[in-house]
Image (tube, rainbow, N blue to C red; front, side, top):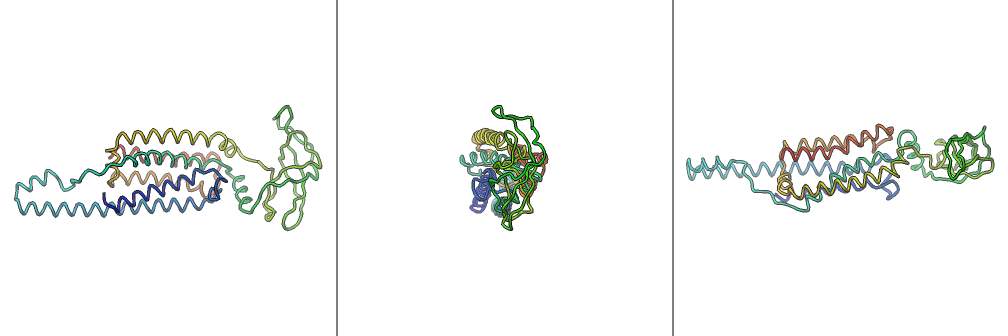
Length: 321
């Protein structure tokens, strides 16, 4: 395998790994682990695709050069040895190529990478979504955070939610608070404030808002949707565990079939182009989750479809190579 294909191939793998690693980092871990629009992931996905296209181009050039060299060699043999050499060349075929080199590291890198890519796709569905997710993103981008404010007035009678903690009943209230926005203090009505016990005037409460953007309004702190709460507590750890198990299993299986992995390193249009189509389809499905806030059901459907892309590509390569 020539240096060009080796360089572009490893570049594709490494840039793809970096993209997947950034995608699985939970929000707040690093500055780049942001809420949509996740422009850094879009750029990195584009860089991975560019590296893959460079690998395909380098492979096609190498393939054309190899075939041209074989044709020239066969022509010289025919001219020198006549019909006997022609028959031997025919038996060998113009497509005869040396066995590609094996790489134990590549088996582990690809096996773990496929599982990591699927986990990265599923992780995009974890977090606030829908209209609430869009509001949270706007507040965060405007520098919003949680503030402790005093209840100026309780409107109506607090309603019991039916939940309780430590034998203390939970209530939902509509309150009025004075919010010190940058443009000046304003009285704002906040609905659905949940507290342990009935909320009374003068009590301090945590609310989320952006001081520089009063038009965004004020909401109770920790007002998460099902996807955000259950996703962080339950789903994300499950994704990591399943990805680890699947990655190790796939890597071990590839390690036992090093010859097949080595053959798959060499570009064949009928093998790699359909596999690339599966990967591109998965990437296209994940774009709405990187640029916006679909509903919970739509988001998980897109994430599941995107997560299936790497496994479909692997199944195709195994079947055809």
